[in-house]
Image (cartoon, rainbow, N blue to C red; front, side, top):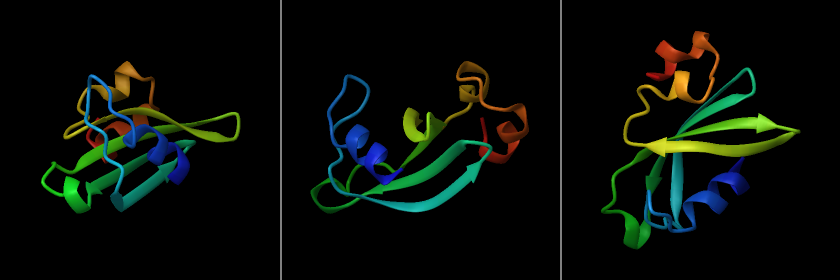
Length: 89
């Protein structure tokens, strides 16, 4: 999971800046899905903390989406409905 987070957060995309240094402040794993709260560190510490949604596929964790809020992501990414209110999806 850490590798998947580092791969995604370490590269700049049109949706977010690269965040090479970060700390996972909380992590909840349920039914092959995970929601992590990530705080940028070092020179990136001025950036907002983000929520990261991941899904385990073929035995490996894959990045799904990130944001300061994930409302609507449950339906969009087919997360089990039982996790929507728990994770604010």
